[in-house]
Each structure stands twice: as structure tokens, then as C-alpha cells.
Image (cartoon, rainbow, N blue to C red):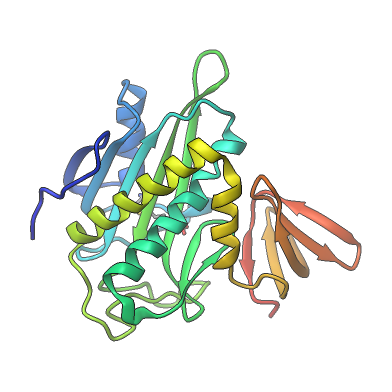
Length: 251
Ligand code: BTN
């Protein structure tokens, strides 16, 4: 396996064969001044983390990377880079393994194949001394050779779908290429084209869903995402605007 992937201009690769979490390592570097485009890549993680503090089981063979970004905007807008990353994962996998068929995006940032999760994205940010966004880390995990069994939301991998999994280094090149494309698009044109591409791939749009929030579960119809990326849920009590939560089938 090549450990020297070809990356677009502006990206600086930091390879850690084994690391606790690429997000933690990227945050550590960002705190000490690492520039936007700093890219942490690990072959395995010993303390991989998912959203809401969940564990992200991270054996060798799957893909783990985190990008440092320093967008000049507030966190709620910077969080749109999660949609950028989901599009990039989808484009990378579709290009590398066309036999996978339709890849879907599940709000906010998961990528699904046949209704099962193949990739997850973890955004973490810190402010600067003036209270503005200091940096954002976009962490991406893709199940290439294996997926966790018994996860709350069913998971799959490329191998589990019956296809030869690409090497993580090949996935890194493809992911960063597409991430660079969509991030430029977002920086130059705003969220509208990213939103349009994401909606075209959205899982469950217009359908009944269940959304788990901190301390409550809501049921309703997934009406849309708004111009910021907020989920619009039509419930019997009216429309709810949801900026953080976990989406499930209605159950
Ligand atoms: C989720 O779906 O809950 C998000 C999963 C994010 C996992 C990736 S793997 C690379 C990066 N490092 C981590 O510890 N987590 C993210």
C-alpha cells in the first residue's frame, strides 16, 4: 500500500499509523497553529469516536481521516462542511466501487448504502480568544473491510456488500479530491449548490421518520433541509426546526 497519496494543492498530510482518534490529533495540531488543509490520516484508531460520544470501532483496513478547516464564519455555517464531506464520501465511493449502486445521504452527515451506514462524519470546533470560530475539524470514517455488528443504526462495509475493498490510501486520494471540489464550491457559491446535491441524494426526504434529540424523540415527515442545513420535520404539532439529532426509520 502506498503511504504517499497524491493530494490537491493546499493539503498537508500527517500520517499516524496508529492513533487514539484522528480528530483529537487534528485538534491538538490546530490548537498549536496548524493551517487549514492539515490532514490527519491513520491506519487504525484505538479510541475512535462517533457523534454524541459513541465509540467508533476502528480496526486496520477501514478509513480514518480528519481535516483541519478555518472558515471565516460562525460555527452553524461552518457545520455545512459536514454536508460537503458527505458528498465527497459519496462521490469517492461511487468512483472507486461503481458496483455499490446508489449511495444515499442521511441527515445530518451519514452515508448509506442499501439503507445501511457505510460512513460517518464527526465535526468538532473550538473558538478563538475573541469568541469567533478558531478551527473546525472534519473527521471521516468509512467502513471498507468491516462494519460494527449490533450498531443501533445498521452498518455495512464495502466488503460486506460483496465487493473487493479499496486500499485506504486510494480512498484518501479520492476523498480529498472530492472534498476539495465541494469545499471550493461551498466557499465560492455558498451552501445552495451543496444543498441541492445533498437533497438529490437524501435518504427519507418526504417520508415519515423518527428523530432522537437530547432527551426527546419526535416523529413526523422529513419535509426538507433549509438554506442552512437545518432539518424541517412536520409533526402533528406543527413544523419543527432541528439542528442536532439522530434520524431513524419511523419504527
Ligand atoms: C458518527 O457517525 O457517529 C461519526 C463517526 C466519525 C468517525 C471518524 S473516524 C475519523 C475521525 N476520528 C474519530 O475519532 N472519529 C472520526
